[in-house]
Amino acid sequence: MTILTKEDIKSSRWRLNIDMLKMAAKIRKKNPNDFQSATLTFFGLGGRDDRAIMRRMASDPQGQRLVRERVPLPAGILKPEFYQNFPVGSLGRIYFEHCDTLGLDPEFLSIESAKVSDTLPITETHRYVYYRHRDSHDFWHVLTGYGTDMAGEAGIIGWTFAQTGNRAYGLIALLNATLCATRGRFDVFKTAWSGFLHGKKSPLLMVIDWEGYMDMPIDVVRKSIGLSLSNPYQPFEMQDAPGADKINH
Image 1: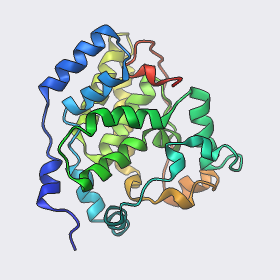
Image 2 (image 1 turned 90 degrees about the horizontal axis):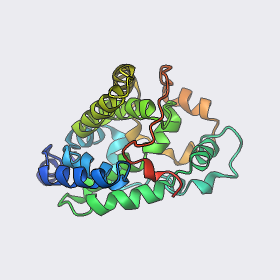
Image 3 (image 1 turned 135 degrees about the vertical axis):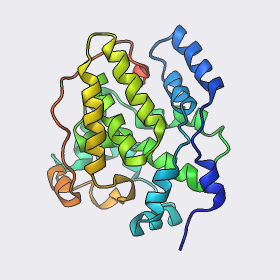
């Protein structure tokens, strides 16, 4: 039984949006780390390219159920404070500590991204799939072990490209590594590539219903789903990183 329509497939076709890229460049010129410029760049580079991940989810029994029933991510993914009293070492508690320590507000990121994504004419199925990988970004950082420094972002974005097939992630990973290279960190290209290979061999996290995992020890979760940690890499902090103003909101 197919759960995708022709409209869904058409909605998720990869295409560049030059106007968005120009707007992103204008914003970035005024404020290099403005988060909205990062969102516009993502969609300008074809961020609607969710055809591959929609088909992967549609071909998986669990993915079919998630899409058909529009099963949401656990509420604590966007509101990590929900997990602050979960058992020490549990997936939920570690996710909360990750966001709390770094001053990350996943709900803020979701709202800001929606200012761009919600203007796009995409189907409800496509929107559901996009929201699912968009809102999982910081959660996937915790699961995979990539940090939020520029090198770690290159790794997790390369990993996400492998998982979703969305070419905008691949282009963003390349841009990220190139920006690091201008500061002398050519090794970040290797980190992005390593992340991509890691994503290829990882289980498809988009089809996992996480509700029953959040109170489990994180090592047990990784073992039960067959997820390995990222390879070691050398972190790289940048004050003018795109989207850096998402910190401490």
